[in-house]
Length: 64
Image (cartoon, rainbow, N blue to C red; front, side, top):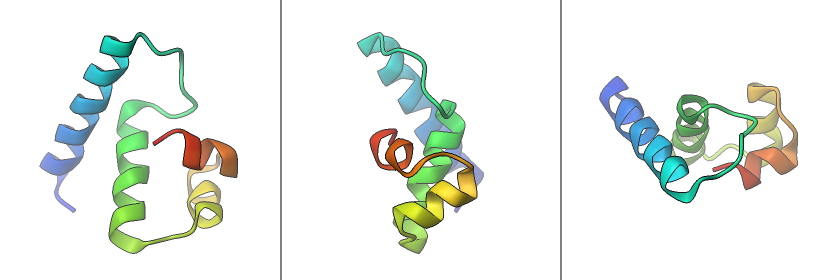
């Protein structure tokens, strides 16, 4: 995956968070973008992603 794709998705997530006025998240917008792209590219399960990002499984599917 290219770094420009990661930067683009991170910027879109930050803008969406600002527009919606959401509360804090377990992951930053950059880490959330990386998690989503890793899921789409590799097809890892939520348990695998949660272990890799050191978050709970519930945070994994709820955050993106």
